[in-house]
Length: 183
Image (tube, rainbow, N blue to C red; front, top):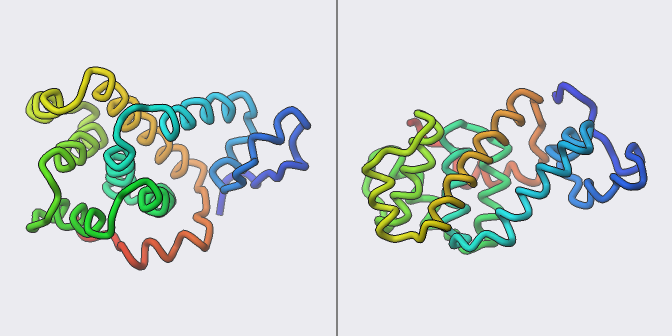
């Protein structure tokens, strides 16, 4: 159960009701701070719609952050979004297999993006080995955006956990189809 009540548009001042045009529980809790929610939305919108980083790679990085932190909310929401942005069933099966050290069909660039997300989540920085590989395949802008994305979603999973945000029932099916494997 969430630590703060979920707000509805009618709970907000008229100038802030747009913050809940997508009324997911994350946003319904975050709008207790309309200014913070608006700033959060700004970076989130850039990541989703304006970053030149390949959308599939972006989502694989975000899914990995949710996967290794066991953030059911983040993981299931971005499995759904990832499927909308080019992530495939085989990618999701491959991510779990790769995390478990099993054979998979992921390409080397995708594995490097997953490694970057893992390293930044578990150790707070990307290794030179991963950075050097990615820098051979991504522009400086893409690399910078990848670091921003992984950093941002590490913040999201910490907000979700601390605020004890409930996952919406319609996303639970994604966890049933793509469960967490032991790490």
